[in-house]
Structures are given as C-alpha cells and as structure tokens.
Image (cartoon, rainbow, N blue to C red; front, side, top):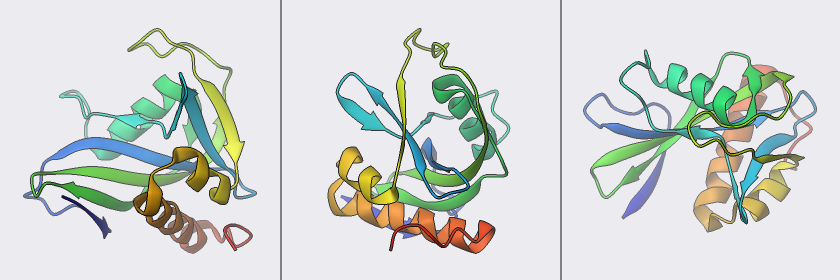
Length: 150
C-alpha cells in the first residue's frame, strides 16, 4: 500500500528514494525521458550524502545537469508501511549542457513542460497529480510562482 503525506518524513522511517520537481521562473517543470518513460530527476541516498538535500542535489546534477536554488521538501510516499520516497521541489538557477549520467553512462532527453503536461507525461495517475499540485503549492509559497497550474 502506498500513501502520500505532505511535509517531512518522520525520523523513524527510512528514506529509500529522493526525487524532485525542478521549476523555472515562469513555472515550467523539467522532466526527462529514459527510453519511453518520463521521470523526475532523483535517486537513492548514498552513504557519502550528507542528507536528503545532498542526495537530491547530486542526482539533479548527475541526471540532468541542472544547478538549483535551495530545495524544499514537498512530501513523501510511504511504501508498505516500511520506507519513504521523498519528493522535493526547487527553483532552477542554471541548466547546463546535456551530459551522460556518471552512474549509467546514459544521456537523457530533457523537457520543460507545464505542471498539467507533467501530470500527463509522468503518468502516475492520481498519486502523481497530488504530488505535482503539492509541489506547485510549495513553490507558490516560497517563490510566489502563481501563474502555474490553474
């Protein structure tokens, strides 16, 4: 069973994944495509990561070569009452050139899309819509991005 929770993960729940929503100043989201699947940048915490913010920043650079402002926690998916999959949001400061992911050697296609398009392309059904809308709300409160997801 998977349940969505807004806010930070309680300290007694292990975090197995950190993925995030990257926004431009005009409210677009950066997603990428691997084979035929669209995804958000992110991955698994590594022992050398200081915290989930460190995991997120590392994965964002590795997968999509993007520099971000201070990331914020959006919420988490609680999987089978065992572990969390964290979702974060951040404002894009700079998009670097496409480069291979050092973990896989693969290069991914990047797309800037509206939040509505992200909901459709990510194809996460109702769970995805709740996550995207939660990320938009976090970005509205932090950066005043009010022209997105009407």
